[in-house]
Structure formats: structure tokens, C-alpha cells
Length: 79
Image (cartoon, rainbow, N blue to C red; front, side, top):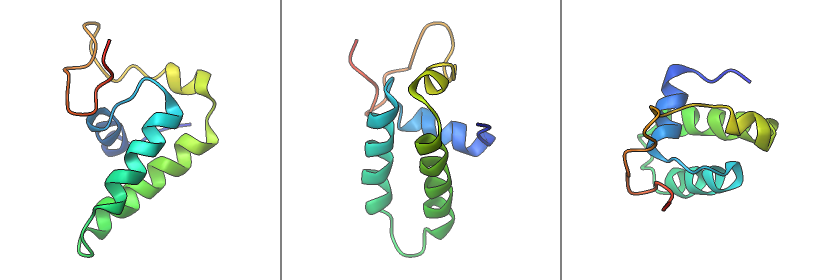
């Protein structure tokens, strides 16, 4: 499944090493969007749809960060 550059960026911002957790986090963010944030809502909806269609193995192949791992944003997994 091909993600757009914007979808990859969104996934990095709401990163989780597990696909189901990433979907949950994105849905939580999406629920907080204001009515005028339709572009972000639609992009998030597209990304969630793509994540639902891919397997956990496919998801794990996405290298969203450099070799040093995530920068440690608010939603980064604790390792």
C-alpha cells in the first residue's frame, strides 16, 4: 500500500510501532479536529483506510524514522 508524503508525515507525528495502536491514535486525533479542518480530516481518513487494508507485517516495513528511531514525540512508543 502506497502512502502519500503527507500521510507518511501524519503517521510520523502520531507514531506507534503497532498498526492497531496507530489507527486508534489517529482516530482520537481525528475526533478532536474542528469543523473547518476538513483537509486534515480527509487525509486522516485516507490514512486510516490504508492502515486498515494493510497487514501488520506490511506496516512494520515502513521506515518512517532514521536509524536512530523516533524522536520521542508525544505519541512515540516508550522503549
